Length: 174
Image (cartoon, rainbow, N blue to C red; front, side):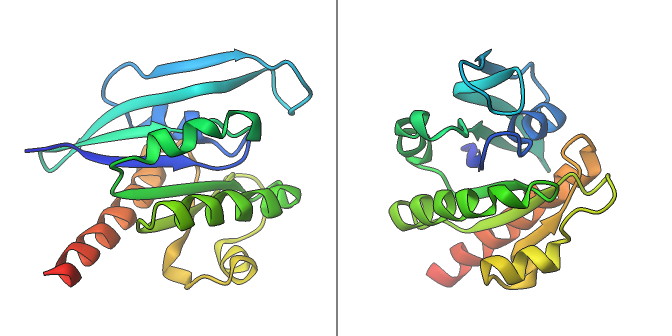
């Protein structure tokens, strides 16, 4: 069976690398480097993250994009052939929401694939909840999922939801 390609994108610090590390059955290929500017953390993805997961025997290739705009040229390359997109945003960083919206609009306008928005950091108090984020992004509630990228069961929820959307799109095309 051919692998499914799913992209994980979003602003810096949203949990992209963490999500892929949490889900991958193989050691994750990472391109982390020391941050050369103040981004709120010491390292950043400069190329991609890659992990592999099998669900019901179906191989799923997970590709994580860099979050910094200066590495955005990689986004189009990674989205080539992708079947779905998981856009992560930190519920603890509402100042990143406009940036996340720009990323989502850019990616989905150039690569119209099913997507979900994963609102990370739901394991800490006083963060934006999925329904608030759905309202902010003007998305149906079922496209926005609260999650903890460090929890396998929580991370799997976003992947299961995007696979449901991909399956629905495939059935609609028949």
